[in-house]
Length: 548
Figure (cartoon, rainbow, N blue to C red):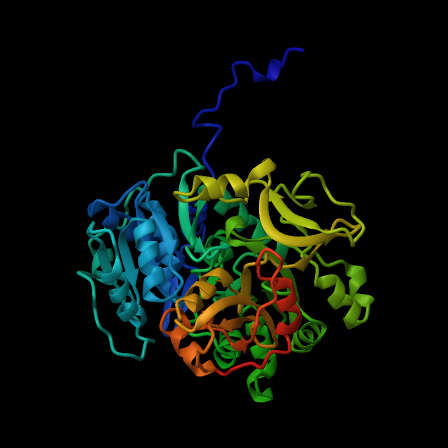
């Protein structure tokens, strides 16, 4: 059979353009030049001003020899330079690497080396840890260090770079003619995830996926033009789930929040009439636990996305009473943050809160522009029965999926085996097509929305001279969702205390990775000597928590 439509109808500049989220800010600056784009303390910045600053950033980076294929890292809280970096860096052709501000110098040094950063933009709050990280790099290639300044930072400012951010922008051209990517498969961002090993993996995003997930965010939320978005979610986390690009597409308002605490959140909601925000369960729990005088006076409904753990009935009920509408999403770094959503149905509103919580606890269905999410048998790669009981592995496929892991072809091949992205999360699928996680990947602990590799923590524990064997599993926690619980078998005759172990961990790990419970004793093992972690998970919940 001949296909008459495939003949003599080639793609050309008139009928095809690469997808990129950079087009969103260009349009908003053109159509809504005087609409507010960014609010930060006393600063109010329009979309026209923001677009100009992004073009200046791109121009200035190119003038310093940074372009396509280069990496620009940023160590920033949720401030205006972080918003601008999401556009200005890729406008230069470079790839944006947002660093986790909670990490220690050793981990940051690894990322700077592995990602081959040519430049780094640093907030004064993190100048000390970045200075240490830069000194620990193995690579000797020069790095352009750019210092930002922020009137809302109350600490001592110590510049570690050769130029300030504002001086850098002043050297760039305001009408810089940045180029659209010629290939939407080009990299736009690099994000590091703990994965299942101590060494983080570098997840590479492409322009196409970023553009499509940004639009999917709009569709999942029915997000209107000029939405007012509060930055409670760190922009270093999966590029803020692609919301810097989403907000630009809607010509919305980025309300920056340097520090996340209940008072700041409620004050911002009231002052700026915030309509949308995203946050981990711990943030919502903190909001619910805030004193009544802080919580009062929200005059309008606020839409919130929650991910990291299913929202319990008490959270749903409490947020509803305050006028908040929760949407439960699910995803991983490898799929641009959330790529599935628990779509709510009108009929659910008539159910009691317990039943609504049960339905809302599911990870749901694929995002609009993600091709598919399913639960497959990882051996046969066939779908499991949609009976809500048979377990398999959650897998995704489609455009909202990473290019792969940087410099790690084996891990990339394994992740995409059989034409699906393997999440490592065990789940069931219900007759209505909704997915629900039943068990986490064995080696990952999700604490306050942060991934912690149990293997990384175990490696540190094994470095202590008194430790014979160690295993780390997740301990349920009402505040953080999960925290690391360490089970330690000591060497014969060893004399060591819990405080000794905690001090040892603090010397080698970021604070959020330090175990919050320590249990000494012989570890259960198989006949071949393998530690039986599933047995430890059964007792981790009753382990005594430690204030660290």
